Length: 253
Ligand code: PGA
Image 1 (cartoon, rainbow, N blue to C red):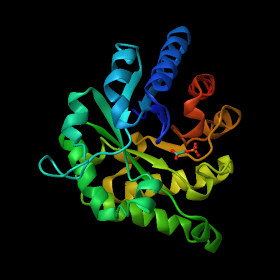
Image 2 (image 1 turned 45 degrees about the vertical axis):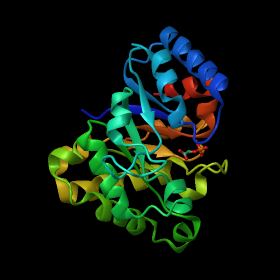
Image 3 (image 1 turned 135 degrees about the horizontal axis):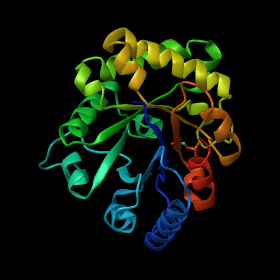
């Protein structure tokens, strides 16, 4: 069954108190709302994971995720955090291959395969990000560009492994810019990605795959985006830092 998922990506924002306040507000609001059919994920920076997890407690449908993990299992890798550590702190999801990691930390498609392997080996659900920069969109080669990201990173996995992965389509030109892809642009790309996954892993895996949209998703455009048949939720940056906005997005299904 394809899941609806709304994941908040805090990026490198919020100190300890701010993170606690935001999480408590979201937990309280979600308890009051009926969000049965949506899986909600909070992806704070590593240092917040333990305290955010404590606040989440057993709130139904609310899960902890991380923004990154190491491609290595353990050892002398100063500054890294392994997927196994994340799982032991109660994380269930991990964002892999966000465009900011690809761009600022030179993460390659091959490295992202290794990170995805680590996530899967430790029982985490990878939220695997893909998306094209503006010049590729303008050149009209965006579908091939994004499909290639998936081919290079994910096509070596088994069908069983692929069934555990979530995709997030994040057009780079729409991230943090206030410029959202139109719901038709999102739908077009999501449908193309789903059929690309079907071509390798079969219709059943592709049909059950959740594909999230990311890039300036807000309370006032989420409903329209989520109404599209191949848009199964959102990866939310800026708007995930405001409890009311984030919960409004969750309620947009
Ligand atoms: P944004 O970020 O919602 O601030 O555009 C989305 C993301 O990068 O995950």
